[in-house]
Image (cartoon, rainbow, N blue to C red):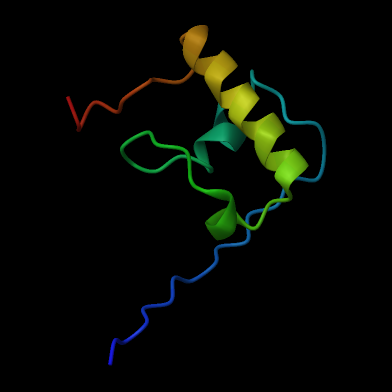
Length: 73
């Protein structure tokens, strides 16, 4: 018998347009290592998550967000 470990859903919500320049909002959807938190944990819709991923990748490319956090380096 395996015990199933359930992860707690965080339920982060996005009310308006996801802006790639808003680093504070995007930072909520990144782990401390700089990885994007999966959709099943954030509770976003598929469309919102696709927009979020695009915004995060744009922000990383323009050096608004780091690709990897300083702690991992």
